[in-house]
Length: 275
Image 1 (tube, rainbow, N blue to C red):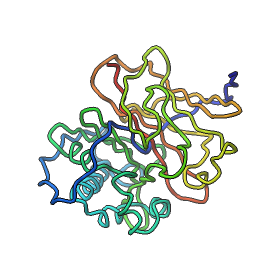
Image 2: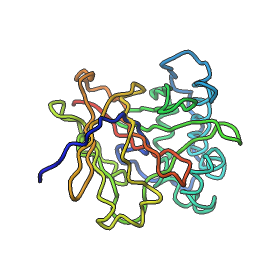
Image 3: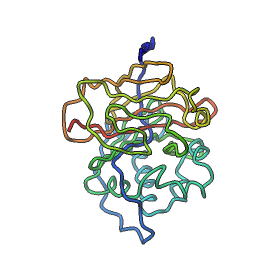
Image 4: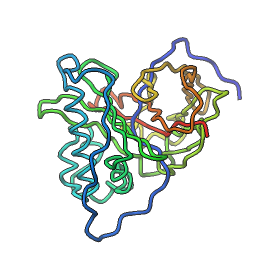
């Protein structure tokens, strides 16, 4: 299928998460919280413009993950931005879908464990922080920003209904609800594709968006992405020039604004490693 390269090159950012499948949590009492993970920052812990500081953002994400680990979903819900809550629905619905659509309990435990690494860096706009987490072959990322209610997390979750409107094709980890894990092909750009909105994706447009600009990160380092469109999909190629082949996992994240009507960033993250 022929494609036409878009005239502009865009910067990327990550939202949602793709990781290796974990078993669903049991109803038993959750385990005691492990030691805090190592936490790094790409810059000193100073406010990002007039917004939240990186240290505040990391602390908020740790609280968010701890709430999932302890299955306190109502508490996790209160840490979401108003825009993220509008996508998630009422708190009761969030509690029903939180593990499958937001953060798995096992993943939260891994990120907070001794082998987990949580890192913060500048986000896609001033006053916004990107926080990433890695443990084993799992990776995730969140946008943290200041709001009238204080620092809050943009986590729009994984689209739970119908065919996923986007998926990773390099690495070939697929849609986020599959959460497959596979090495990246370092000879080609990393890539994520979005289904055309006219191809049965209208129902999810207001919740997922149809981005004409995205921001991409490897870890917390912003990298560029090039857009290519066809009749059936929009593809974003992410340069891997700065990636050194390694079995160590880095989070590969893209982020985009959902719409002008919903004040929230959506991200998608996949583990990046070369085998």
